[in-house]
Length: 225
Image (tube, rainbow, N blue to C red):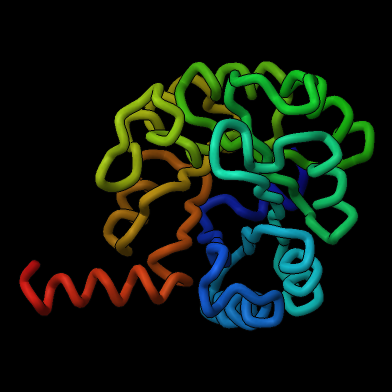
């Protein structure tokens, strides 16, 4: 196992991403957010877009997990080999890519993408939506398996919090693979529960770096909606 991945065991990864049209959608702002997360103890930063990857890489010392979203349907998280290589060239230490069994825009299989990236000495984080995706990603040689897309591909219901059932199944089936839990981890208690379920590490994004959502949670509580 690569030392960088080994070092993430038992750690917190913080996702710093802003959606299109939001006030914080700016590379410098995301880099400042990432630096703040690093100072708070984040062991790695996950981020989106070539400009953000480059800006964040210039600010933090921890590993950068980069991705490139194009579109919002189907395979849109680092959808092609070209996207993945661009993320690496922009400064990503690990590249996160869609690891579902859906057709990829460039016609390559997930396994072919992993093989090409490994030939370039690029580490791959597989964003999966089901246990079938996780099995496929493990077979293809992905360096990290993740529950990122659970509840978003139609294969599993969208849970209110992290998909602990999928996490536990993945950990049980692949005890020698790093399985990271990502998706809807909104509280420290949920993060602790994820780690107790056997996750290699946990990714938290919205609850730390998305003030619009956090404000909405508090407003709902205050106004009783």
